[in-house]
Image (cartoon, rainbow, N blue to C red; front, top):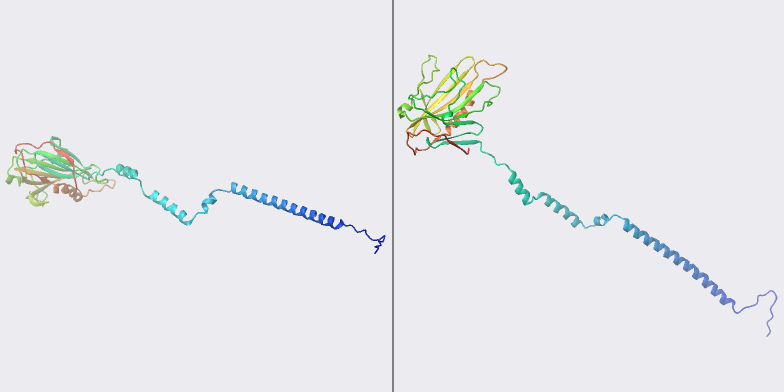
Amino acid sequence: MTTTWKSGDKKPSNHEPNNTVSGTMLSSWSRQQKLAMIAGFAILGLLLAVSACSKQGPKPALVGVSSPASSSATPAIAVTAATTPTAAAVHARVKKTPKKRPANVTYSDANSGLSFLYPRKFGLTSGDTAQPQLAAVGRNEAPMNFVQTGGVTVATVVLPGGSYPGTDFASAFFNVNVNRSVSEQECAHFAFVDTRNADGEPVDAEKVKIGSTDMEMTSDFSANAIKQAETQYYHSYENGACYEYVLGLGAEGFATEGGIEHVNRDEVFAKLEKILASVKIKPAETEHGAEPSIATIAAGKE
């Protein structure tokens, strides 16, 4: 059988199908390759961007992603360190703390066996220089009030001059005298006694008890238009001697100017009587003929 081809028909070719398949495969591989290359570049760019961000990002971000337990424990340690002082700090603070001095000072005299407490801010003199000074009328010193001569001044405590600002206060003191020339009966009497009664007659001494000690007491008062002076005398007999305690107050007088007030006498004498109440006398260990020596002053307790 003979096949007849017409002029309008295409001549069949045995290679046409193979060429078509090869072209299709080539065209398809090229697109896949392009897509793969594009995807590769995209992934590479993404990796570079992520790497750059991780390098440039603040490192504290890693600390922020910490567990709650660790974040809460850190402040506790800081607070403990801040509130717990070191041994060196405690030692330094204790070392720098000033030692508080006692408010009172103890005066003692070995020969007379006498001792008493007085405020540290008050002044003290002893021995021959201890004669008390008083802003008195007609005299500068408060005299001893023994019925016999032979008295010796042991010590005098003086209040500071500015103790009562705005008042007519001039001076105040506590004084101790000892006389070994008088008997026990004579010690109960005074050379001069209170003359404050209306008739001007002397007033007998009165018996008083200061602390645990029985004493004889009298007072003296003198004044004029510009000065006043008041003294209180106490006698007690111990260790074969007569002990005399003098409490004195001096003021500028009745006339006050510029709003100056009279000093509260009761308040002043209350301070002096507190010193008197602290007096103690030890039994004598030396001969009675010895005079009191200059006393030593030591820190004492309230």
